[in-house]
Amino acid sequence: SLSEKLQNVFKGLKGKGKLTEADVKLALKEVKMALLEADVNFKVVKNFIKSVEEKAIGQDVMSSLTPGQMVINIVNKEMVSLMGDEMTEISLKPSNEITVIMMCGLQGAGKTTTTAKLAGKFKQKGRKPLLVACDVYRPAAIKQLQVNGEKQGVSVFSMGDGHKPVNIAKAAIEHASKNDFNVVILDTAGRLHIDESMMEELMEIKQNVDVHQSILVVDAMTGQDAVNVSEMFNSKIGIDGVILTKLDGDTRGGAALSIRAVTGRPILYIGMGEKLSDLEQFYPDRMASRILGMGDILTLIEKAEAEIDETKARELDKKIRKAEFNFDDFLDQMEQMKKMGGIKDILGMLPGMGSQLKDVELDDNMFKGTEAIIRSMTKEERSNPAVINPSRKKRIAAGAGVDISEVNKLIKQFESSKKMMKQMSGMMSGKNMKRGKF
Ligand code: GDP
Ligand code: MG
Image 1 (cartoon, protein in one colour):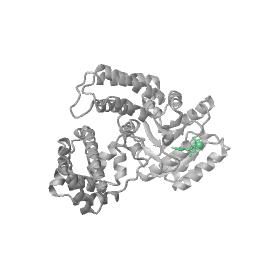
Image 2: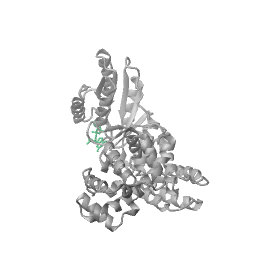
Image 3: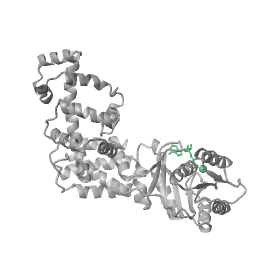
Image 4: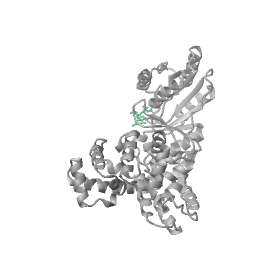
């Protein structure tokens, strides 16, 4: 996948003291290959690489970041800006007016499903949505909208298949104004390929009805095609935003990265599954970290901010940096992690850890034995683990009622988690400096 490839590129940069022009060029050559393989539009890739290169070369390596992290940082920021920087909300008129939204896209892209998903979002916002069956070519399509509407608890307007879509839309709006609906979502018909009659039908609706938003639904799994389809729809009928569906099945991320750059239109939502609740707001920064395989560091930081006592964290951070981290802190850290949620969840959010933890049995109970061992240590042993020699290990094991191998394992684990936390603190400090936290 794109994430894995990019991660390998960044790994190659590890352990280098300074980022040279040659390093940057070599890494970006590989980033370029990875993006092209992920089906990102080639023009987008070209501009992207150019702009990352300009920013990376000649920039001082920050002392708190490794060269690899520095390139990740720049690539990440460029990706976020490529996708539009900020989250974009669907524009709605005030509640006392009717907002008409026209859904369009190819057959099978997910229009009907997404129409019902959106209705749920509008309902949550206190709106009263009306779904309109304008796909008159497939009788099953009307039924599908009715079934989904019922699941969402929203009304569906249909006139069967004997009417023109534009007339159905007009009648629906009339019905909406008489019955106090304030969002009217038109579920239109698609074709397997872009064709004139589909475009004409959409244009006819647009010309005769006050369409406030034309939203294009595209299937992320079709990669470059999704981008071409977006460009075509935008130039023919004009779209206000895109909903990218089936991102749950797309491991490449190419469409997400290219659509905004090619069409100038924002991605509004992403479809993450077949269930009607599987529609998520699109956040460029979260998508970038997902594509980069940085886990969801943002979520991690948010969780940490919410749960961790900030002063404690600051102290801990200082200790980790000075490598003074000891078993007392380890106990503390375990407590914090328990508060933040499952250990596996937390570790899984760290870059590269997710795949490593896939087959590992990790649960919070596992730390019970650990706790017993640490509690059997003397004050001196806890604060200065270096003094723990074989005879001390024996005593600690006896005290905790475990085998000496358990004590050895813990000390090893402690050493490696010390390393991991050091990396983690380096990573997090980049974000935290920006946010002024920790
Ligand atoms: P339409 O022809 O554009 O109206 O497409 P439909 O709404 O009928 O969807 C086509 C298929 O894609 C259906 O089987 C949906 O369940 C499925 N689908 C729609 N959105 C998603 C999504 O975000 N993820 C997944 N996995 N499937 C989806
Ligand atoms: Mg449909």
